[in-house]
Every structure is written in C-alpha cells, then in structure tokens.
Length: 168
Image (cartoon, rainbow, N blue to C red; front, top):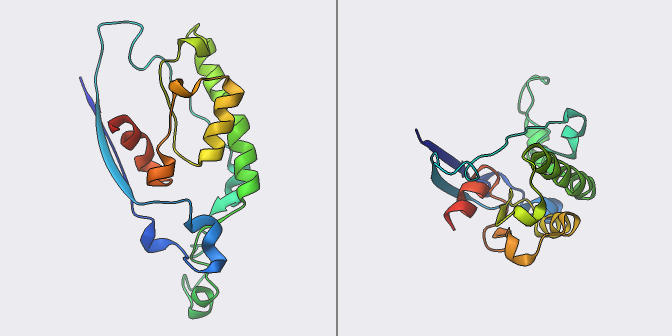
C-alpha cells in the first residue's frame, strides 16, 4: 500500500575539481533521502498522472565518455591523464532542452488530468539547476509560492533531488 522512494548519489568522488571540470563540478552535490508515498482517499490528491520521456539523441550533452565497453582496454593511464573519465556537459544545450521539455511534460500531465497551473499547490521538480527552475517557473506562469527549490543549498543531487525536496 505504500512506496518507499529512495535516492542517493555520491558525486564528489567522481568530479574533476580542476579548472577543466569546473562547469560540471560546481553544479553537483552528494545527497541521499527517502520518502514514503501512500494512497489517499481523496481522488484529487496523490499521484494523478505519470509520464515518462527520453530522447537518446541528446545523450552526449551530459555524459561520462570513459571508460567505455566500446574501447579495450577499458581504462588506460593516458585516458585517465586526459581526464576522459570525468563527466562533461554542454550546459547551453542541456539548459535549452530542459526549459522546453519540462514545461511540455507538465502541460501534458495537466491536460490529462483536466487541471491547470492554477491548481498546482506546490511544484517540486528535479533540482537540476536554479536558472532552469526559474525559467520553467516563468514558462508555466507559476508564482514563487507554488515552486520549491533547494538546488542553491544542496546542488544537483540527481537521484536524491526529489526525495530530498519532498522531505524538506
């Protein structure tokens, strides 16, 4: 009858803290949290809609290029020296896709439930980046009191971001 949602990430041990990796390292944080989700007798509460989207065409915008099972040997001293084992990100393109795709997904959920943004009491999204969150808020025309952000305190904790936000 209940779901235990757990998310945990340790990014600090896998980031490049040199100048070369600063565009990625400044965004991500370590985190872990759990939240218990359960049913409600109120048909207007709880999980009203689920949609999932993926677009592999943009996988290279934020990825860890090495090591790869496509290369043998899997790890070489030269590749490690070059820093190829650290994540790389094209922040401009990640931002562009996030600020268009996230509002599309929210609108899809609202349309399928015959709701509008006025019906949103609290919007808790993945805490990817504060600028993304602010742009999504503007595009959805949500007020400040309708949106929760903790990215400025926690960083992008990836899998832990939503359970952390729910807990807070």
